[in-house]
Image 1 (cartoon, one colour):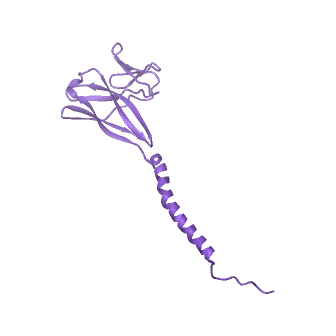
Image 2 (cartoon, rainbow, N blue to C red):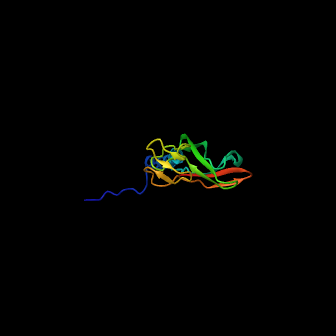
Image 3 (cartoon, helix red, strand yellow):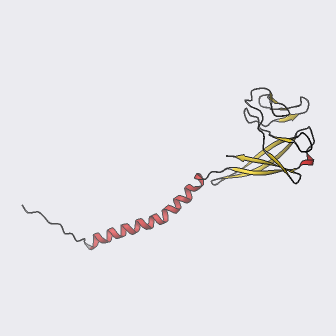
Length: 164
C-alpha cells in the first residue's frame, strides 16, 4: 500500500486563516490588556493615609483641661469615596508641652467623651474610663488611649495621622 504524501505547501485558504488569526489575536491583546488593567488597577492600589493635620493655634487650648478637636478626611478606595470623621483630645500640660489622644476607645472603638464630674474620659458603650493622661482607670479596654505624634510650628499644633 502506498503512502499518501502531504504537500509541504499551504493552500491560500489555510495561509489566510493563520495570518488572520495571528493579527486578530494581536489586535485583541492590544485592546483587551489596557481594559483589563483599567478595571483591576483600583483594587490593587494601596490606600494609606500619612499626613500632618493642623489642629489650630496652640493658644486656643487651655492648660490642664482636655479640648476636643474634630476633623474629616476623604479616602478614595477604587471607585468608592468615603469620608471618615476623626476626633482628638488635646491636653495642654504647660506653655509648650501637650499630649494628643484619639477619642476612640481601645476596646470596641466607641467615641469617648471628657466627663468633668469624674475627671475622666468615659466610654458610653461599656462604661470604661480613662484618666487625663489616657491610662485605663476602669473597664475592659486592653490598653491606654492611642496617642498621636505632634509638632508645633509657628504657634500651630500639627498631628501625624497615619492609617492603612
